[in-house]
Image (cartoon, rainbow, N blue to C red; front, side):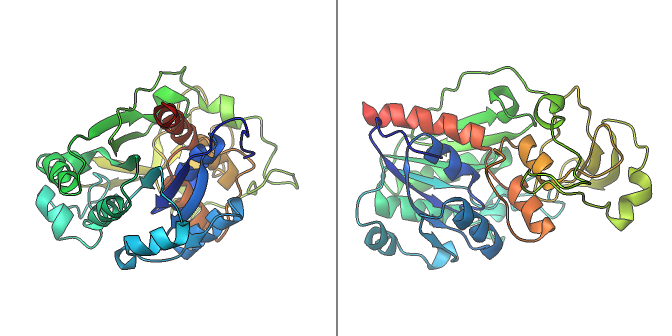
Amino acid sequence: MALNSEKKQFSFIDLFSGSGGFSLGFVQEGFEDKLAIEIDEKAAQTYKHNFPNSKVWVRDIRTVHGLEIIEEVKDSVDVVLASPPCEPFTAANPKRRKSPLERFYDTPQGDLIFHATRIIGDLSPSYFVIENVVPIVDSEGKEIIKEEFKSIGYNKIHFNFLSSEKHGCPSYRNRVFISNVYLEMVSQRKKKVEEVMLDLPSPSYPNDVPNHFRIPFAKQVKNEGIGIRKGHAAVYFKGASRENRNWTKLDEKDLAPTVMGKSRFIHPLEDRPLSVREQARLMSFPDSFIFTGSVEAMFNQIGEAVPPIISKQIAKIIRSKLEK
């Protein structure tokens, strides 16, 4: 994570920072991490472990005022990052409201994006990037977001639809990055599971790889998980608009399915669940990034992150804009 001293250092803050996947790419690209705000104490602990010199507030964003941030950072901020919870909008949520208006205004977490825009309005950064699931812009959703940004002085915004697997991440992940900059990213060769995971030693024995230890099957899938075919799952359940699956056995010759907070996978060549480190590799986290907390908390932190390989490419685009 060493910064390149030859580059001019720009700064950012990360709202809804989670464990730090979004931040990591910006730090790797030479940005200074001024502040992270995260309500989940376990995720915040992971963030602090990996960015020990960063200021981390464990707070509900609804209680944070822009003036507090200005007082903390003592200077202007070049970029604001935000990844509000996606539960009100994702098709994986069987309780998702049918109306986009209800998703924003009548669900406990739906209005959190407006607190991100409120803080962006207070700080007036040169650039901002808000990540979320694609259905957040369904129907009236896009106009709701446009009007919100117009109210804080950003009359032109871009809805950048990015598929992570097209840009070096070995798992499928379609997300929208809402920003005041067009994120034109160069496609890369798709990486298969075998390229990023099969070089790891067995998690059953002592090894020097962080977060790489054997995990047992959950009781409800133990029998179903043994001998399952590649590409098939032990658990199927109904979402808002599609059938979802969990405990999928990976195919080493293919990409991994989308990694979500509750996602669990079966190793392609062994009858066992993936280790935390193996799952982190599916989201492009380097082995030097250490996850802390319970096993469940670590898996959740991975699945709820922005893949660092994507955030680094976004950071590079924004840096080039700032330097001009």
